[in-house]
Image 1: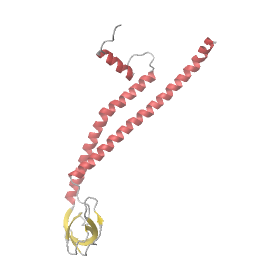
Image 2 (image 1 turned 60 degrees about the vertical axis):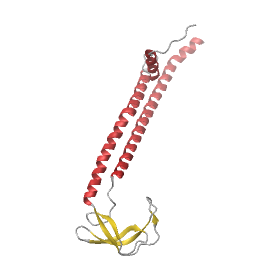
Image 3 (image 1 turned 180 degrees about the horizontal axis):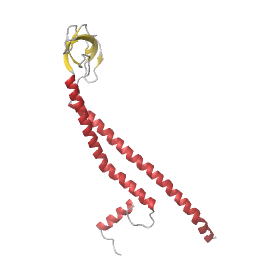
Image 4 (image 1 turned 180 degrees about the vertical axis):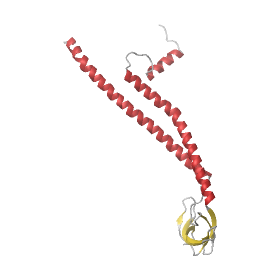
Length: 206
């Protein structure tokens, strides 16, 4: 009894071609080849276009966020605000540290010489007359500190991740819709053929 030899490269290619629907099987219909084309197109896009899109989105996000950070650093200023009242002894815990913070009234001078006052967030228990760093905009109003490089990288990472997930879901959703439509057409063709050949086959057996 002969034993089958090791698979050759040609046999392996033929096997994968058959699995992918790329062989010349005469039983495969045009709609089957269309489905194969759709699946292969989605597969290529998943492994080629999605990574390229993620890289492009990350590059654009990096440029935009860096430009915004530079513009904010150019327009905002850091000044020393002087507390005009004692801060409460008990405050809320800072989410990024164990320090408790509280709101207190303070006064500060903008670069144009105008004096402003308002509530600022300081360490709980800070005394009247204490000086605290404060970021203000060109109008002298308080504003958030300019974003740093780590913040920019976090925004770029989030943008890239969302872009990748959205692209994958879009491709898989498009594939599912296309395959569902092809299956409906295939079922309709099978029904039509059965209505045409079924009676002939039944009469032949009778």
